[in-house]
Image (tube, rainbow, N blue to C red; front, side, top):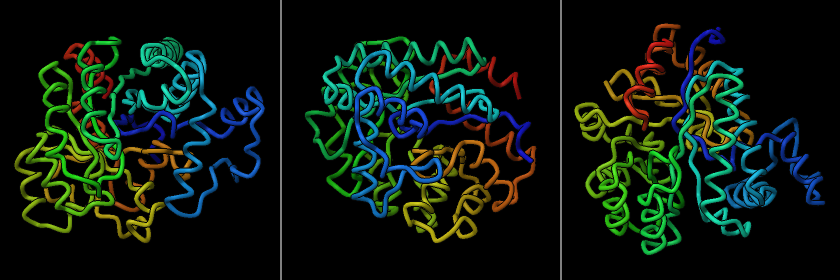
Length: 322
């Protein structure tokens, strides 16, 4: 039903986007046994702890600049086949350091992969550098300074992931100020495992234009109204939310309620092979469970492109594809 709809994705963690076939190839390259980790082209995990363990195992299979080029290229070419015309990927230089790779080489590799995918399929891609909340405010400032130093042309945004139940966004104001002053787009994870109070905390302290998830804002009608009036865009990930147990099924997911309340919403896959989803599947979910027709879905894509961290010429070219 949605195959012909142009799609755009603003929320995907690149290490979490490594498809199982690619991971198996990398495992053979580095002589790592991941046979017990994969089932039906998805990664096997049972709770959040084992999810993190699986994620770290897969991330550890990417160790060189070329590995990261291959990762970005493979992912973007795959979603282009699903109709995606644009993608932003969350990246963490902490993963690069764990692999013994300089942040500059990590970003260069990802950028090479984005360029190869664009040449092959026409898809545009950009990079959002993220700090990790549970690593603390000082580490976040280090990431922000690196991002602000313009380490690679495709780095256009700054955000924060990690355990949103730890600390406050107030602790990270200096990092976000550095990124904002450098002209980077600002997003941050909130309102996923943390409740609506985590969204208020983010809005009040780091002033993002977008929120990663933000889905639990639905629990506070005043907050929903605030989001609608301010035009804060939510990077919603329905498949991820259901897989992680935030909602029992897609039929009970509040995507449609948020949209009907006037909150700008987008569709995203988060960590697709870990959650048995994809950007194509997310658009199908929206049609099947949330009642969106083709025009509605194109409007969701338009919202994503209008909120994208890109230059205006690129934005205009993407909008023309709608």
